[in-house]
Length: 172
Image: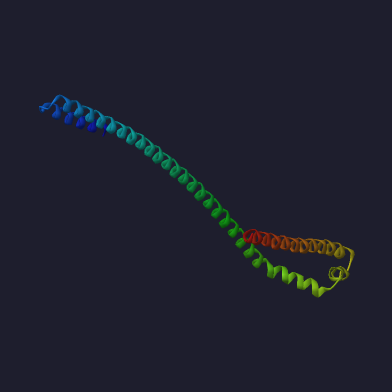
């Protein structure tokens, strides 16, 4: 743009030089042309500086956009990770609930049987033995049943606690 203006100014001054004019008038026209060229040159320099400023602003905006895109990608990755963790926790809570529901009738039935037997439930079995050999066999059987009952109840308690923890983790 600067070159176009300079060429235009030189062309105008060249045309003026071709026309015959008095010496004083020619000097005045030359001075006006020189002043006009200088003014146009200053304006061209100012416009060039502004265009550099606009280019810097444009580059700054491009960098800001790239930063925002990277932040968006990072947020999307964090969202995907959180969604996967939530899905895993939900699946775990659902599996624990299903396992608890499946085990509850067996545990409930066994606890009802123990309740019906009363405090001395296993002792009554031992007292029903007819000789020492039966008593030994019955005592081993009663001990095994007591261990299994205790394990079953404790396992059910742990299952219920794990389910509660999983539901609390989902709620929190």
